[in-house]
Length: 116
Image (cartoon, rainbow, N blue to C red; front, top):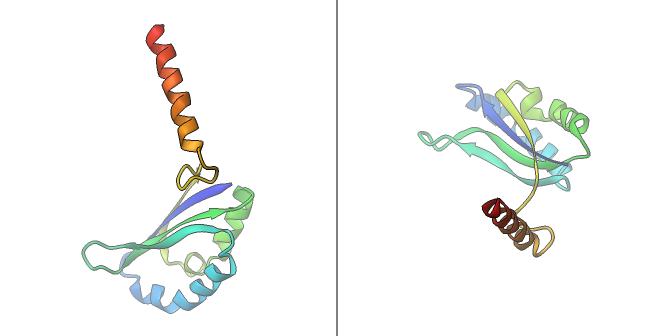
């Protein structure tokens, strides 16, 4: 199951982020086979980090909760908020032709609704 996790740093927490960055990177390396995408969110004013975003593939919510409980930035109290959403990957396509199939289904549904 894919989860999109958006984490927003607490205000004025750059020092805490810097102090825990190495252990965070070690953790990310250890779970790299489960990560689909990730990186820091950028503060538009300062150009520094404002949080973190990652998409991770785990069997379910219990495994995600365990992952988050052990994640060094989260464990260290860096985040003001953490938002989790289950997602379905559309792009890049895992199965070539999937988007064309979805488009064909959508067009067929439109045609049926126009006849009704």
